[in-house]
Length: 321
Ligand code: GFB
Image (cartoon, rainbow, N blue to C red; front, top):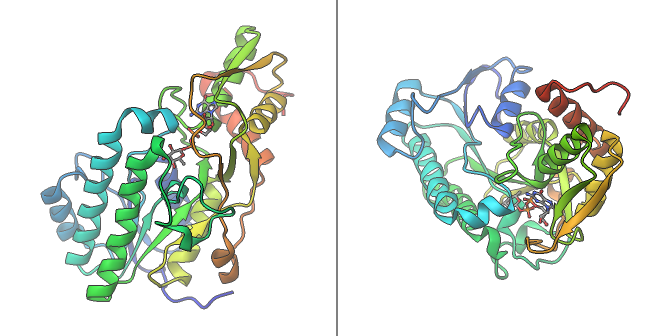
């Protein structure tokens, strides 16, 4: 394993976006380290407002920062709200990164997404595939904002020697995920559709697109573990991919959820909805080379999410896993 380059122990650690799926997973994971976790609600500081962010940093003086705050969503949300995905994300990341530099934050991690890579990037996608071809049109707004965030961290490192790093996670799921069918990602959407169809006796659920796209899924708790590992063991300009290696087709994912939830109906395709990128598999050899590997299997993670969704619905869940 790589040497520890930065110790979170004893530090004041700000998790921007602590109410989101990723931010809340980071907060849970930091509870195993003897550090002070700082969070801010939108009333404390609206991260899209520069003066509010500067004032919050000046008053709270974190030592380390995880930039997990972002406007996120699935393929339809990305395609429908280009301004929100570009403007909000640019504002959040520029405000937080600039305020961190202005208050001498010692270590910062910016979080991006696998959609930064070209739509038809060679698979698995290596870090150096960035900016080698056109982006996937449904999420180019989000991708451009995230690429700008990587570049901003690199610019602060180059101009000021700031220890700001970037991690690019693969498609994520886990506790606190968004189950709104209009704005969510595929995994929570299919869980909701399948569980609700099962419980209401509906005979079919609709899967968007052709079901052929391939996606790599990672549990948010695995991600949080990887991020804390990188915060302590990585310090360089290039961004680092964070993947699980667990790749599955969308149809395969639908079948897995159907099996785990005990749904006996059919899956039908909606061919009017987009597929997005045909394949998004991360090459995570840099991260693996540092000594980190994912632990949570997709089958185990999906079963846990179904159980959580059923608990939220107040539905019985015995005997279905
Ligand atoms: O998870 P998802 O919305 O995001 O969709 P992306 C993945 C695939 O699942 C697409 C299909 O091919 C969808 O057409 N799919 C099937 C569904 N049924 C459904 C459904 O009910 N809901 C949803 N949402 N999809 C996002 C990007 O792309 O991934 C973001 O738009 C970000 O920018 C995120 O990078 C990680 O993987 O296609």
